Image 1 (cartoon, protein in one colour):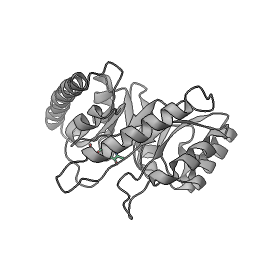
Image 2 (tube, helix red, strand yellow; image 1 turned 90 degrees about the vertical axis):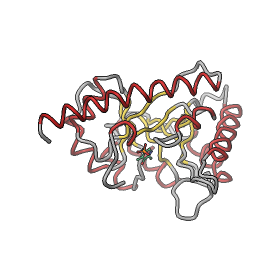
Image 3 (tube, protein in one colour; image 1 turned 60 degrees about the vertical axis):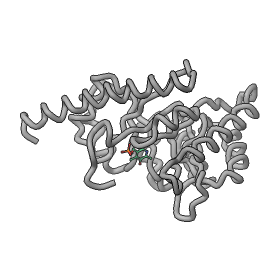
Length: 240
Ligand SMILES: *Cc1c(COP(=O)(O)O)cnc(C)c1O
């Protein structure tokens, strides 16, 4: 990247960020919410220099999808952002990220949660996790089916190396081009889980991670507490 184009890219990120923040504020207002909605910058394929710029502009939370890409880039991030892992995670890769991220959003099987627990205990820490729910019930998608959520949640509650903080979803788009019915279902699942586990100190359910570039305002109307934003912040990606 040349210095000239870099300046343009940075000022675009700055403008994008301003607009996203306004949209978040407006969606919160519409929803009558005064609690916090965190903006996560999703960094896949994004140059670390641009990521660092966004951190300087106040994006304090980053989301990483790919283990290898994250390990290659992390030393070049400036400003000590908080980092969450949000991508599909193979059990054999947990060891590479366990002491480098503060939350894993994509916990979606007993096997994976057991491995996160084991590695966290070895590293002397407790990892915050979100259970990823396959809210559209799609065959090819990651995440647990809503019916299986409870069993996994109570299993995680027994582990000293993980702390269940809530739920995550990447909902499908329905025939009307909207994810809203799925966001509404997630909101219900989340509030049920929160209600049932409140006062039980094995749980600390407070996080609902949903909403991306195309639908974050709708997700906020349905209670999202972390919106994961890539392309409308950093620009279009060539690959997913
Ligand atoms: C890529 C990705 C995002 C961000 O997607 P955009 O549509 O570019 O905002 C959010 N969450 C996950 C899990 C992703 O893989």
